[in-house]
Amino acid sequence: MPDFHPNIWYPFTILKEAPTPVKIESGDGLWLELEDGRRIMDCISSWWVNIHGHAHPKMAKAIADQAKKLEQVIFANFTHDPAEKLAEQVTEQLPGTLNRVFFSDDGSTAVEVAMKMAYQYWRNKGEERKKFICFEGAYHGDTFGAMSAGERSVFTEVFEDLLFDVEFLPYPDTWMGDDTVAEREDKIIRQLEEMLDENLETYAGIMIEPLIQGAGGMRMCREDFLQKLHWVNRQFDTLLIFDEVMTGFGRTGDWFACRRAQVEPDLIAVAKGLTGGFLPLSLTIASDAIFEAFNSSDPIKTFWHGHSYTANPIGCAAGLASMELMHENEPVFSEMEQWHREELDKFRDHPKLKKHRVTGTIAAMEIDNEDADGYLNPAANRIKKKCVDKGLLIRPLGNVVYLMPPYCTTRDQLSTMYNGILELHEE
Ligand SMILES: *Cc1c(COP(=O)(O)O)cnc(C)c1O
Image (tube, rainbow, N blue to C red; front, side, top):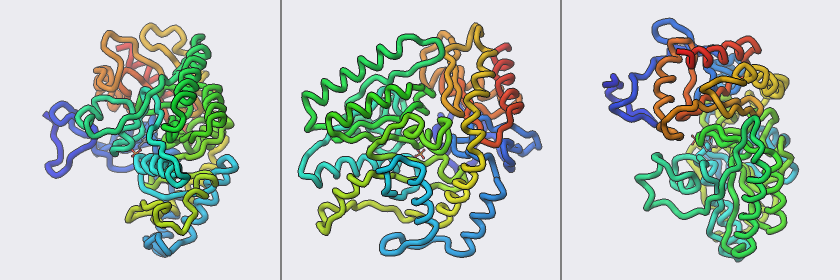
């Protein structure tokens, strides 16, 4: 039986099965220090958020300075510099028409906001478009709208009756040596065109995790697919929503997946890397056209949504400091894909680790075992237990082993991570 703290209920944790949580005393760059003094490498940027590593002094200073100046203020009828500057700097890195930033607190909520905006956009224009088109294997968060848009799984099963219907298309995931992907993409695009052709007036929008599905198992698709999706979106006049909660801020080798794919969606949700993992903050960025549909004196056309911590100044100051580090770290996050490719070459003929793939700073492969694929594949628990003893924080998603290191990782440290994975699969 795990020895949990008697006053804490841990997330994503099967209460009678999970190991006792490991206590972390402190962090420093790539490293986390355990209570017993051992150090482990954070190979996954914790929950994919610490893009610059732990306890970065520049981040800490920006947060402390802002806390002494203005820690929080109501964001309706009032505004402040950190929010305005952050909105300017983020939109500067996004395609031309994505100019309106709406603040919230986490990825799930940023997705909820995007879906609410898309839905109300059509209402404001006098149309009733109620359905979303989403992708098999998607994960958009744990609130009700986000759950509805995601793959039905053990995470959502209990709530099935409360979720609204969306239509799912296959996600054309691919890997090194896969020669079937172009054909699969075309089939999905044809299916989408048929749906829109028959029932365009029922669809509010299409939502996708661009280039990489995160929690669904680091499934990667090609830029070509996003371009085809964008083209269909333009032909039919529907809305394209990119959930860049995980792919944003350098993860795909460029600032955003939409930039790498040269695609201009109508709405984008970002969160995880936004504050470098220091404070909870998220953004939904809308195109000028979306914003204009709400720009009215009619209360019914108003977007009635907000949170008590909306655009918290300390969170925004962390976001600004992280943006500065993003510029400093640009050479690393754009180069890391090449490092991953060199390392993955060591696994070319590995008998157990298959379907190698990489996009930007993220690389993944699958353990070929007898058990069913998916989050509850037992391989994950076996590896989680062993890797702390090897000095690594790796947390497989079912049978998918992946690395998502912070941008302070050196070439040699990345090599150490891969050697650790090799050793874990020799025993
Ligand atoms: C993590 C994640 C979310 C949810 O974000 P939270 O901050 O955990 O609520 C949504 N979408 C994607 C793609 C994610 O990876």
